[in-house]
Image (cartoon, rainbow over all chains, first blue to last red; front, side):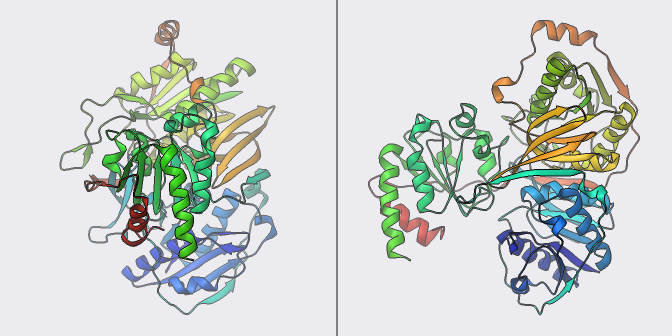
Length: 322
Length: 248
């Protein structure tokens, strides 16, 4: 048996999340004294996977899989797992991976743990740590099945280099029409902007911005930092910003390297959603705002004065450091 | 169209999260329970199908008698019939299996669940349920229309949206966007009175197997003090983010 990791790609190019799940899966392979196999779907160059400990890649190339289809992708990974006799299958927690993982688990009669944040402990059976209650707690979960599916929370493990020698093998799973019951009519992806899930930096703003017309400076700050933009719940409820930007307990979780909150007071639901981010900066006029208790760096000040200055300073910094 | 909405009984989003019995169990004392927000968006969308397209809407939950006020609330919002599968929910697969029985028996066209519950955040029940009953599945659904036996849905993807078409039966993993926050209904007195007369059927579980087991919980380490920076000294912030946090 080897550990199997599904390494995602987009437009033929492996995603950064692919290298993180590979690093994590390599950690499990080492714990269990076994090797690591990756499966890719329509990825062109997979060579970089060897940097993160992958020894073998099953390369699937199939035009029918050019658009994501959860059922079909789950079937591909199931067949790869059976071929390799893998007992552990690792996926990311991208929107697509979260979509396919439960289907994959049923295919493989596997127990599935989502939002995993650390390598398993093997002392008393197979136990993984995962987040629960929207990052307000961690839960140790025992998985009793022979085959296990793990979803790794993004940015929880990081990239770990572990050079391996890599062999590539073309793999052609058998797919029937049953796997294509859902028809993808159109995909509307913002190509100029980094998504919250993929961003290293997220710039988020709240009611303190006073109105949607004031978001230009937020966009500009995000632009300077190559960041995604996000917002608080009231801002999305009032229609100032799209729902897809709402982060928090009922919105999106954010586990980024740097989270900058501007004019967000820090409701408990918001703080839960962003707490997995490594570094948090808050800019708020109210020194009593709860966000100051959750942040690493805080500025008590008016966003309308601070943000434009910060943009200028960051531009200078970027010019001097590139 | 026959719709089944799966309801999870969860602590309100403002609840204090604590654990008891050597950190093995969630501390329910003083906790207010609500319909899982992701399920409530789906329930409200189901009400729209009822009003506009004459759909019937049943609701189901898996849980003990303590979940009945939550499922009654869904009746007060307008669901027709409620089912409670009388067993403690222990893991996602077990819950999906219990729901699959109800879904199969009721021959539903559309089954709406939330993309995840806000307590355990497993995010697996809708997908597993779909697979178990051989229905199509669309996750993180933010818009849903049904014409005849075809559904058109919009799904949120990382950095965008996707429009999908599917035949029925279909299982939805729903979230905000299916309806707006302002569309959510607070049950009125008439709804609450009517809900008392509506059937709440208690069903024996199929006693599905449990594949994962919660061992114990821990809370995150307490956070260190915030470093305050003078708004007139933003160079300091940039220096800290660059040299200390290594974030820029």
